[in-house]
Each structure stands twice: as C-alpha cells, then as structure tokens.
Image 1: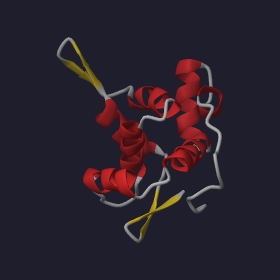
Image 2 (image 1 turned 60 degrees about the horizontal axis):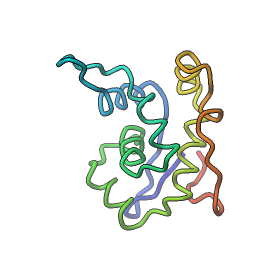
Image 3 (image 1 turned 90 degrees about the vertical axis):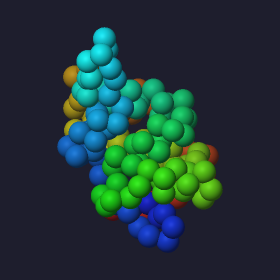
Length: 128
C-alpha cells in the first residue's frame, strides 16, 4: 500500500518490522513490567472504532522510510480522507499473512473477521 503525504509517496508494509514496531509503540506496563507483545491486539479495537490516534500509530509503524510521528499526525489532521484511509489501512492489514497469523492464533479470527469497515467512497491510496 502506498500513501501520499506532503507530496511524497510512502510504502506501508505490514510484516515483521511493522509488528515489532507496533508492539513497541502500543505495548503496556503491568505492575511496572513492560510487555511489548500485544501491540497488534491493542491496535485492532482502535481501528474498528475509527480511532485516529491508533490509525496514526499504525501508519507510523508500517511506513517504510523514516517519517516522524508529527508528519503522520499532521497529515491525518489536515489532509487525509479519514473514512477511506481507515478502509484502505484495514484492507492492507487484512492482506498481511503475518497479521492474520498472529490474530488467528490469539483470537481465532482473521483481521477481516474482526474489523468490519466498509468504504464510503473509492480507495484513496495506490496499490503496490
């Protein structure tokens, strides 16, 4: 999936690096102990409820180049078609073998079975 931010195209990849980064960004502390193994599980409910903060984190973790969180946040705040961006990101994640593998092992369901988002218009991102 490619996303155009500030005139530049960025490839979003939902593989191992994405899962590692998401685990780091959305991990939690339990009794003072950091757990970085549940980032994907924390992201999925946020995507299902159209949480723009979670969308920003998912994009930041999936982007293939060094882009700051601030650039991603400003893009979402000022330029993004949020309805369709949620659809496109969930679709791209649904196409990821690794995302579906992890979700299936933990929840018994794939991304498509968990997150039911329907497009309001045509896709705004370009295909790979």
